[in-house]
Image (cartoon, rainbow, N blue to C red; front, side):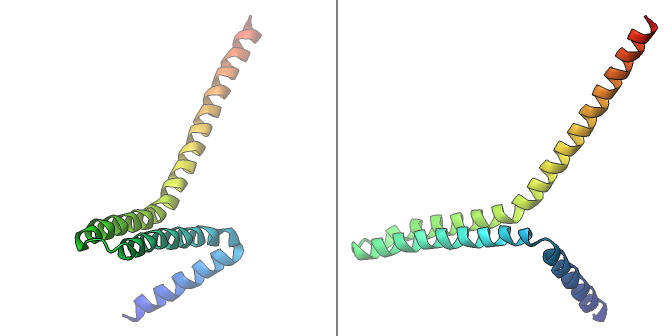
Length: 117
């Protein structure tokens, strides 16, 4: 059990150092929290409007269901998006490296062909 606490403290320390070196990493959680607050506020406003017009109780059921679904969707999106973005960047890097290798080989073959006449 003590090993788990030590590993957790080490991970927390390294995470703190990473964020301290690159403060731009803090923007993604801030934007995520703002989006969640904005969506929650929108659905709370819709619920308050339904209450203000004295609507029937069964109109609240789809309102709550759609509101919770959208909050879960945004939460999951902001959990998965950094990983997907990193994979996309790595994939672009690999594709550019492969394309540069092909261009280099074509250039070498053409240079050899021109030089040998």
